[in-house]
Length: 397
Image 1 (tube, rainbow, N blue to C red):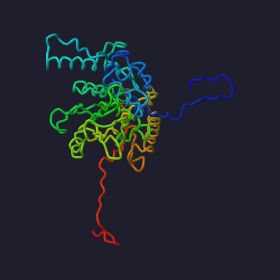
Image 2: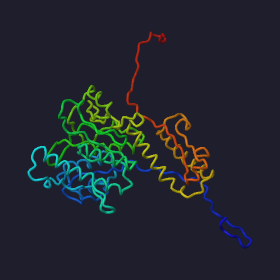
Image 3: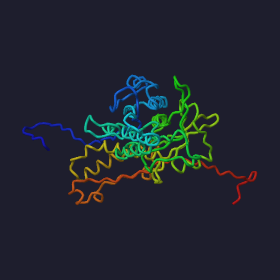
Image 4: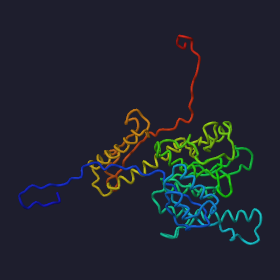
Protein backbone atom coordinates (compact mmCIF):
# COMPACT_ATOMS: atom_id res chain seq x y z
CA UNK A 1 0.00 0.00 0.00
CA UNK A 2 1.19 3.49 -0.78
CA UNK A 3 -0.52 5.00 2.28
CA UNK A 4 1.38 5.06 5.60
CA UNK A 5 -0.58 4.43 8.79
CA UNK A 6 0.93 6.19 11.82
CA UNK A 7 -1.82 6.03 14.46
CA UNK A 8 -4.39 3.42 15.52
CA UNK A 9 -7.76 3.69 13.82
CA UNK A 10 -10.08 2.43 11.09
CA UNK A 11 -9.10 3.30 7.55
CA UNK A 12 -11.19 2.94 4.39
CA UNK A 13 -9.54 2.55 1.00
CA UNK A 14 -11.00 2.49 -2.49
CA UNK A 15 -9.77 -0.37 -4.65
CA UNK A 16 -10.30 -0.43 -8.41
CA UNK A 17 -11.32 -4.02 -9.06
CA UNK A 18 -14.50 -3.60 -11.06
CA UNK A 19 -14.95 -4.10 -14.76
CA UNK A 20 -14.17 -1.33 -17.20
CA UNK A 21 -17.03 -1.65 -19.70
CA UNK A 22 -16.11 -1.15 -23.36
CA UNK A 23 -18.48 1.28 -25.03
CA UNK A 24 -19.45 0.67 -28.62
CA UNK A 25 -18.24 3.51 -30.82
CA UNK A 26 -20.50 5.19 -33.34
CA UNK A 27 -20.80 3.68 -36.81
CA UNK A 28 -22.72 6.14 -38.96
CA UNK A 29 -21.00 9.54 -38.86
CA UNK A 30 -20.39 10.37 -42.51
CA UNK A 31 -17.90 12.62 -44.27
CA UNK A 32 -18.86 14.24 -47.57
CA UNK A 33 -16.10 15.68 -49.72
CA UNK A 34 -17.18 17.69 -52.72
CA UNK A 35 -17.33 21.01 -54.53
CA UNK A 36 -19.48 23.97 -53.59
CA UNK A 37 -19.50 27.55 -54.84
CA UNK A 38 -20.09 28.89 -51.33
CA UNK A 39 -18.90 28.04 -47.84
CA UNK A 40 -15.53 27.48 -46.18
CA UNK A 41 -12.91 25.65 -48.24
CA UNK A 42 -10.86 22.71 -46.92
CA UNK A 43 -12.37 23.09 -43.47
CA UNK A 44 -14.49 20.12 -42.28
CA UNK A 45 -17.79 21.42 -40.90
CA UNK A 46 -20.09 19.31 -38.72
CA UNK A 47 -23.77 19.49 -39.69
CA UNK A 48 -26.60 17.62 -38.02
CA UNK A 49 -29.49 18.66 -40.26
CA UNK A 50 -30.24 20.09 -43.68
CA UNK A 51 -30.72 23.65 -42.41
CA UNK A 52 -27.24 23.72 -40.93
CA UNK A 53 -25.83 22.60 -44.27
CA UNK A 54 -27.60 25.31 -46.26
CA UNK A 55 -26.40 28.02 -43.87
CA UNK A 56 -22.81 26.98 -44.52
CA UNK A 57 -22.78 25.75 -48.12
CA UNK A 58 -25.96 26.99 -49.77
CA UNK A 59 -28.73 24.93 -51.34
CA UNK A 60 -28.98 22.77 -54.45
CA UNK A 61 -27.99 25.63 -56.76
CA UNK A 62 -24.55 25.95 -55.13
CA UNK A 63 -23.24 22.50 -56.09
CA UNK A 64 -23.79 19.78 -58.66
CA UNK A 65 -23.77 16.80 -56.31
CA UNK A 66 -22.78 17.77 -52.77
CA UNK A 67 -26.08 19.35 -51.67
CA UNK A 68 -28.27 16.55 -53.02
CA UNK A 69 -26.00 13.94 -51.41
CA UNK A 70 -26.23 15.56 -47.98
CA UNK A 71 -29.99 16.07 -48.35
CA UNK A 72 -30.38 12.39 -49.28
CA UNK A 73 -28.26 11.44 -46.27
CA UNK A 74 -30.51 13.22 -43.79
CA UNK A 75 -33.69 12.19 -45.60
CA UNK A 76 -32.73 8.51 -45.34
CA UNK A 77 -31.89 8.51 -41.65
CA UNK A 78 -28.46 10.11 -41.28
CA UNK A 79 -27.84 12.31 -38.24
CA UNK A 80 -24.22 13.53 -38.26
CA UNK A 81 -22.01 14.51 -41.16
CA UNK A 82 -18.77 16.38 -41.69
CA UNK A 83 -18.79 18.32 -44.94
CA UNK A 84 -15.55 19.27 -46.67
CA UNK A 85 -15.73 21.70 -49.56
CA UNK A 86 -12.64 21.42 -51.77
CA UNK A 87 -13.64 24.51 -53.72
CA UNK A 88 -14.48 24.85 -57.38
CA UNK A 89 -12.44 22.93 -59.91
CA UNK A 90 -9.70 25.27 -61.23
CA UNK A 91 -10.34 24.65 -64.91
CA UNK A 92 -8.99 28.08 -65.76
CA UNK A 93 -5.53 26.84 -64.80
CA UNK A 94 -5.43 24.38 -67.67
CA UNK A 95 -2.59 25.16 -69.99
CA UNK A 96 -3.41 27.55 -72.79
CA UNK A 97 -3.81 25.99 -76.18
CA UNK A 98 -4.99 22.62 -74.86
CA UNK A 99 -8.07 21.40 -76.67
CA UNK A 100 -10.17 18.28 -76.81
CA UNK A 101 -8.84 15.26 -74.91
CA UNK A 102 -5.80 17.12 -73.60
CA UNK A 103 -7.93 19.85 -72.04
CA UNK A 104 -10.31 17.29 -70.55
CA UNK A 105 -7.43 15.35 -69.02
CA UNK A 106 -5.91 18.57 -67.59
CA UNK A 107 -9.24 19.41 -65.87
CA UNK A 108 -9.44 15.85 -64.52
CA UNK A 109 -5.94 16.20 -63.03
CA UNK A 110 -6.95 19.47 -61.39
CA UNK A 111 -10.07 17.94 -59.84
CA UNK A 112 -8.20 14.86 -58.59
CA UNK A 113 -5.60 17.10 -56.94
CA UNK A 114 -8.34 18.95 -55.08
CA UNK A 115 -9.76 15.74 -53.64
CA UNK A 116 -6.45 14.03 -52.85
CA UNK A 117 -5.24 17.18 -51.11
CA UNK A 118 -1.94 18.02 -49.46
CA UNK A 119 -0.58 17.72 -45.94
CA UNK A 120 0.77 21.08 -44.83
CA UNK A 121 0.58 20.18 -41.15
CA UNK A 122 -2.07 21.10 -38.56
CA UNK A 123 -4.49 23.66 -39.90
CA UNK A 124 -2.99 23.52 -43.39
CA UNK A 125 -4.28 20.17 -44.68
CA UNK A 126 -6.50 20.05 -47.76
CA UNK A 127 -8.76 17.50 -49.44
CA UNK A 128 -8.89 14.03 -47.93
CA UNK A 129 -5.88 14.91 -45.78
CA UNK A 130 -8.06 17.37 -43.84
CA UNK A 131 -10.41 14.53 -42.85
CA UNK A 132 -7.57 12.73 -41.09
CA UNK A 133 -7.85 15.22 -38.23
CA UNK A 134 -11.35 13.98 -37.26
CA UNK A 135 -11.64 10.72 -35.34
CA UNK A 136 -15.44 10.29 -35.38
CA UNK A 137 -15.81 9.63 -39.11
CA UNK A 138 -17.03 6.15 -40.08
CA UNK A 139 -18.25 6.57 -43.68
CA UNK A 140 -16.62 8.55 -46.50
CA UNK A 141 -18.38 9.71 -49.68
CA UNK A 142 -17.21 11.75 -52.65
CA UNK A 143 -20.59 12.16 -54.39
CA UNK A 144 -20.51 11.93 -58.15
CA UNK A 145 -16.75 11.45 -58.40
CA UNK A 146 -16.26 8.43 -60.65
CA UNK A 147 -12.68 9.17 -61.70
CA UNK A 148 -10.62 6.06 -60.78
CA UNK A 149 -7.90 8.32 -59.35
CA UNK A 150 -10.32 9.94 -56.89
CA UNK A 151 -11.98 6.65 -55.98
CA UNK A 152 -8.58 5.07 -55.38
CA UNK A 153 -7.68 7.99 -53.10
CA UNK A 154 -10.91 7.58 -51.09
CA UNK A 155 -10.31 3.84 -50.69
CA UNK A 156 -6.68 4.44 -49.66
CA UNK A 157 -7.85 7.02 -47.12
CA UNK A 158 -10.25 4.52 -45.54
CA UNK A 159 -7.64 1.76 -45.54
CA UNK A 160 -5.03 3.98 -43.90
CA UNK A 161 -7.47 5.28 -41.30
CA UNK A 162 -8.50 1.65 -40.62
CA UNK A 163 -11.97 2.28 -39.19
CA UNK A 164 -13.60 3.99 -42.17
CA UNK A 165 -15.69 2.67 -45.04
CA UNK A 166 -16.05 4.20 -48.50
CA UNK A 167 -19.29 4.42 -50.46
CA UNK A 168 -18.51 4.85 -54.17
CA UNK A 169 -20.65 5.82 -57.16
CA UNK A 170 -20.79 4.14 -60.54
CA UNK A 171 -20.72 6.42 -63.62
CA UNK A 172 -24.04 8.02 -64.51
CA UNK A 173 -23.95 6.73 -68.09
CA UNK A 174 -22.77 3.36 -69.39
CA UNK A 175 -20.80 4.43 -72.43
CA UNK A 176 -19.36 1.16 -73.73
CA UNK A 177 -21.81 -1.65 -74.23
CA UNK A 178 -24.04 -3.18 -71.57
CA UNK A 179 -23.74 -3.51 -67.81
CA UNK A 180 -21.07 -6.21 -68.20
CA UNK A 181 -18.72 -3.41 -69.34
CA UNK A 182 -19.40 -1.28 -66.27
CA UNK A 183 -16.08 -0.21 -64.73
CA UNK A 184 -15.34 -1.21 -61.16
CA UNK A 185 -13.02 0.32 -58.51
CA UNK A 186 -9.89 -1.47 -57.48
CA UNK A 187 -10.02 -4.37 -55.03
CA UNK A 188 -10.57 -3.28 -51.43
CA UNK A 189 -12.37 -4.56 -48.34
CA UNK A 190 -12.98 -0.99 -47.18
CA UNK A 191 -15.48 0.13 -49.80
CA UNK A 192 -18.74 -0.62 -51.61
CA UNK A 193 -19.88 0.43 -55.09
CA UNK A 194 -23.45 1.27 -56.13
CA UNK A 195 -25.25 1.44 -59.50
CA UNK A 196 -27.26 3.13 -61.03
CA UNK A 197 -27.88 6.83 -60.29
CA UNK A 198 -31.25 7.73 -58.77
CA UNK A 199 -33.84 10.17 -60.07
CA UNK A 200 -34.69 12.87 -57.53
CA UNK A 201 -36.53 16.20 -57.45
CA UNK A 202 -34.64 19.48 -57.72
CA UNK A 203 -36.59 22.68 -56.90
CA UNK A 204 -35.02 24.55 -59.83
CA UNK A 205 -34.25 21.90 -62.46
CA UNK A 206 -37.10 19.50 -61.82
CA UNK A 207 -36.40 15.78 -61.89
CA UNK A 208 -32.69 15.04 -62.30
CA UNK A 209 -30.36 12.09 -61.77
CA UNK A 210 -27.99 12.10 -58.79
CA UNK A 211 -25.28 9.71 -57.56
CA UNK A 212 -26.50 7.24 -54.93
CA UNK A 213 -23.66 7.50 -52.37
CA UNK A 214 -25.28 10.15 -50.15
CA UNK A 215 -28.56 8.26 -50.09
CA UNK A 216 -26.72 5.04 -49.27
CA UNK A 217 -24.86 6.71 -46.39
CA UNK A 218 -28.22 7.65 -44.91
CA UNK A 219 -29.47 4.08 -45.36
CA UNK A 220 -26.37 2.80 -43.57
CA UNK A 221 -27.17 5.11 -40.66
CA UNK A 222 -30.84 4.12 -40.64
CA UNK A 223 -30.06 0.41 -40.67
CA UNK A 224 -27.45 0.84 -37.93
CA UNK A 225 -29.96 2.64 -35.72
CA UNK A 226 -32.86 0.29 -36.29
CA UNK A 227 -31.06 -3.07 -36.37
CA UNK A 228 -27.35 -2.59 -35.71
CA UNK A 229 -24.18 -2.39 -37.77
CA UNK A 230 -24.22 -6.18 -38.14
CA UNK A 231 -27.35 -5.98 -40.33
CA UNK A 232 -26.58 -5.69 -44.05
CA UNK A 233 -27.77 -2.28 -45.32
CA UNK A 234 -29.82 -3.81 -48.12
CA UNK A 235 -33.47 -4.54 -48.97
CA UNK A 236 -34.07 -0.98 -47.77
CA UNK A 237 -36.22 1.65 -49.48
CA UNK A 238 -34.33 4.61 -50.95
CA UNK A 239 -36.27 7.59 -49.65
CA UNK A 240 -36.53 10.46 -52.11
CA UNK A 241 -35.83 8.28 -55.17
CA UNK A 242 -38.45 8.80 -57.88
CA UNK A 243 -36.82 6.58 -60.47
CA UNK A 244 -33.55 5.14 -61.72
CA UNK A 245 -31.21 5.98 -64.58
CA UNK A 246 -31.30 2.34 -65.65
CA UNK A 247 -33.82 -0.41 -64.97
CA UNK A 248 -31.83 -3.49 -64.05
CA UNK A 249 -33.12 -6.99 -64.76
CA UNK A 250 -32.36 -10.05 -62.70
CA UNK A 251 -30.16 -11.36 -65.50
CA UNK A 252 -28.12 -8.18 -65.49
CA UNK A 253 -27.70 -8.31 -61.73
CA UNK A 254 -26.51 -11.89 -62.12
CA UNK A 255 -23.55 -10.36 -63.97
CA UNK A 256 -22.96 -7.48 -61.56
CA UNK A 257 -23.42 -9.03 -58.12
CA UNK A 258 -20.46 -11.46 -58.32
CA UNK A 259 -18.27 -8.50 -59.27
CA UNK A 260 -19.19 -6.63 -56.10
CA UNK A 261 -21.37 -4.06 -57.90
CA UNK A 262 -24.40 -3.42 -55.70
CA UNK A 263 -27.59 -2.71 -57.60
CA UNK A 264 -30.45 -0.39 -56.78
CA UNK A 265 -33.64 -1.75 -58.29
CA UNK A 266 -37.31 -0.87 -58.66
CA UNK A 267 -39.79 -3.57 -57.60
CA UNK A 268 -43.55 -3.49 -58.31
CA UNK A 269 -45.48 -2.46 -55.19
CA UNK A 270 -42.27 -2.46 -53.12
CA UNK A 271 -40.59 0.70 -54.34
CA UNK A 272 -36.95 1.44 -55.13
CA UNK A 273 -34.67 -0.63 -52.93
CA UNK A 274 -31.00 -1.36 -52.40
CA UNK A 275 -30.47 -4.90 -53.65
CA UNK A 276 -26.85 -5.65 -52.85
CA UNK A 277 -24.56 -5.67 -49.82
CA UNK A 278 -21.09 -6.56 -51.11
CA UNK A 279 -17.74 -4.85 -50.81
CA UNK A 280 -15.41 -4.52 -53.78
CA UNK A 281 -13.05 -7.09 -52.24
CA UNK A 282 -12.18 -10.39 -53.89
CA UNK A 283 -11.47 -11.88 -50.45
CA UNK A 284 -14.44 -14.08 -49.50
CA UNK A 285 -13.85 -13.36 -45.80
CA UNK A 286 -14.64 -9.67 -46.40
CA UNK A 287 -17.31 -10.08 -49.06
CA UNK A 288 -20.11 -8.35 -47.18
CA UNK A 289 -20.45 -4.72 -46.14
CA UNK A 290 -21.88 -5.51 -42.70
CA UNK A 291 -19.00 -7.87 -41.82
CA UNK A 292 -16.35 -5.23 -42.59
CA UNK A 293 -18.25 -2.51 -40.73
CA UNK A 294 -18.90 -4.77 -37.73
CA UNK A 295 -15.17 -5.45 -37.41
CA UNK A 296 -14.45 -1.74 -37.83
CA UNK A 297 -16.74 -0.98 -34.89
CA UNK A 298 -15.43 -3.82 -32.71
CA UNK A 299 -11.76 -3.06 -33.35
CA UNK A 300 -12.17 0.66 -32.73
CA UNK A 301 -14.22 0.03 -29.56
CA UNK A 302 -11.58 -2.34 -28.20
CA UNK A 303 -8.78 0.11 -28.98
CA UNK A 304 -10.59 3.01 -27.30
CA UNK A 305 -11.81 0.97 -24.33
CA UNK A 306 -8.48 -0.59 -23.37
CA UNK A 307 -6.29 2.50 -23.21
CA UNK A 308 -6.19 2.10 -19.42
CA UNK A 309 -4.04 -1.01 -19.88
CA UNK A 310 -0.99 0.93 -21.11
CA UNK A 311 1.80 0.99 -18.48
CA UNK A 312 -0.06 -1.38 -16.12
CA UNK A 313 2.00 -4.24 -14.60
CA UNK A 314 2.07 -6.92 -17.28
CA UNK A 315 1.15 -9.99 -15.25
CA UNK A 316 -1.57 -12.62 -14.89
CA UNK A 317 -3.84 -10.26 -12.96
CA UNK A 318 -3.84 -7.79 -15.85
CA UNK A 319 -4.47 -10.57 -18.36
CA UNK A 320 -7.53 -11.73 -16.40
CA UNK A 321 -8.94 -8.20 -16.20
CA UNK A 322 -8.51 -7.63 -19.93
CA UNK A 323 -10.04 -11.02 -20.74
CA UNK A 324 -13.01 -10.26 -18.49
CA UNK A 325 -13.66 -6.85 -20.08
CA UNK A 326 -13.36 -8.10 -23.66
CA UNK A 327 -15.55 -11.12 -22.92
CA UNK A 328 -18.27 -8.85 -21.54
CA UNK A 329 -18.11 -6.66 -24.65
CA UNK A 330 -18.29 -9.60 -27.07
CA UNK A 331 -21.10 -11.14 -25.04
CA UNK A 332 -23.14 -7.99 -25.66
CA UNK A 333 -22.49 -8.28 -29.40
CA UNK A 334 -23.58 -11.92 -29.36
CA UNK A 335 -26.78 -11.14 -27.47
CA UNK A 336 -27.58 -8.40 -30.00
CA UNK A 337 -27.35 -10.95 -32.80
CA UNK A 338 -24.11 -9.65 -34.30
CA UNK A 339 -22.18 -12.90 -33.82
CA UNK A 340 -23.02 -16.36 -35.13
CA UNK A 341 -23.39 -19.29 -32.75
CA UNK A 342 -25.86 -20.95 -30.39
CA UNK A 343 -23.52 -20.35 -27.46
CA UNK A 344 -20.93 -17.68 -26.65
CA UNK A 345 -18.21 -20.31 -27.07
CA UNK A 346 -19.29 -20.80 -30.69
CA UNK A 347 -19.50 -17.05 -31.34
CA UNK A 348 -16.19 -15.71 -30.01
CA UNK A 349 -13.12 -16.31 -27.91
CA UNK A 350 -10.60 -14.20 -25.99
CA UNK A 351 -7.14 -15.53 -25.17
CA UNK A 352 -4.67 -13.61 -23.02
CA UNK A 353 -2.38 -15.81 -20.93
CA UNK A 354 1.14 -17.23 -20.61
CA UNK A 355 0.88 -18.74 -24.09
CA UNK A 356 0.20 -15.44 -25.86
CA UNK A 357 2.54 -13.58 -23.53
CA UNK A 358 5.75 -15.61 -23.04
CA UNK A 359 8.74 -13.96 -21.26
CA UNK A 360 10.27 -12.61 -24.46
CA UNK A 361 7.01 -10.77 -25.28
CA UNK A 362 6.79 -9.30 -21.79
CA UNK A 363 10.45 -8.26 -21.92
CA UNK A 364 9.68 -6.40 -25.13
CA UNK A 365 7.04 -4.37 -23.29
CA UNK A 366 4.16 -6.00 -25.13
CA UNK A 367 0.91 -7.64 -24.10
CA UNK A 368 -0.79 -9.76 -26.77
CA UNK A 369 -4.49 -10.61 -26.74
CA UNK A 370 -6.07 -12.91 -29.31
CA UNK A 371 -9.71 -12.24 -30.14
CA UNK A 372 -11.81 -14.30 -32.52
CA UNK A 373 -15.32 -13.45 -33.73
CA UNK A 374 -17.78 -15.34 -35.92
CA UNK A 375 -19.77 -12.59 -37.68
CA UNK A 376 -23.31 -13.09 -38.87
CA UNK A 377 -23.50 -13.00 -42.68
CA UNK A 378 -26.59 -11.99 -44.66
CA UNK A 379 -28.95 -14.51 -46.21
CA UNK A 380 -28.09 -13.33 -49.71
CA UNK A 381 -29.58 -16.33 -51.49
CA UNK A 382 -32.83 -17.66 -50.01
CA UNK A 383 -33.64 -21.08 -51.47
CA UNK A 384 -36.90 -22.96 -50.91
CA UNK A 385 -36.81 -26.60 -51.94
CA UNK A 386 -40.36 -27.57 -52.79
CA UNK A 387 -41.52 -31.02 -53.85
CA UNK A 388 -44.64 -33.14 -54.04
CA UNK A 389 -45.65 -35.56 -51.34
CA UNK A 390 -48.25 -38.32 -51.34
CA UNK A 391 -51.63 -37.34 -49.95
CA UNK A 392 -51.84 -38.38 -46.30
CA UNK A 393 -48.39 -39.89 -46.32
CA UNK A 394 -44.70 -39.08 -45.92
CA UNK A 395 -42.29 -38.31 -48.69
CA UNK A 396 -40.61 -41.48 -49.92
CA UNK A 397 -36.84 -41.61 -50.08
